[in-house]
Image (tube, rainbow, N blue to C red; front, side):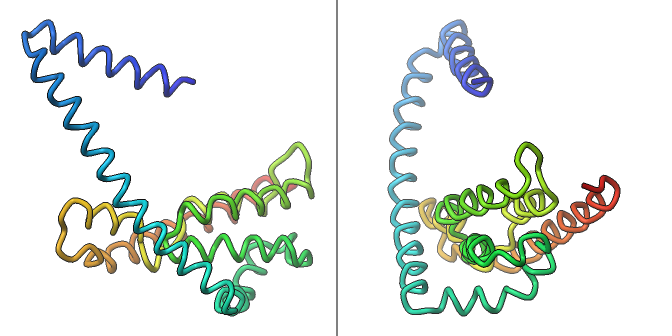
Length: 192
């Protein structure tokens, strides 16, 4: 609700400033061009997301996603010790982390919500250490293939949309590392 008020206020204020300075036609033109550009960007991003969501589905059906989950299992058991005994919860967490690794934020969201629901059942009314860790890992996820960013770059005419990979890998690895470290420190400071 607050963001709606802020965005609406900014739009109204921009229009009023444009009208007050005699730039009403320029403001109207910019609004039309912006709306057109937004639709084009949304369509190009939708195409890339459909492609990678399809790749994720092929991986799931072929068993590659399960293989990736098995590969991640030792690390995830250490990160989520309370949930390690619940196979369904670990499968949800694994699927969420796998989707985030592939840069599929839109596919990772429902998987993350399912994992969060399962973790929340274990400690109703409070956020457990595992639930906090899931939020940190989901928010600051390592992205091996940043599909959303690459699709935005491609839509804007970039000739090599994936040339940002080293920077993305470094930044996402550092953010996840700092997030996990902070989560572990706070878990020790405020014991459940």
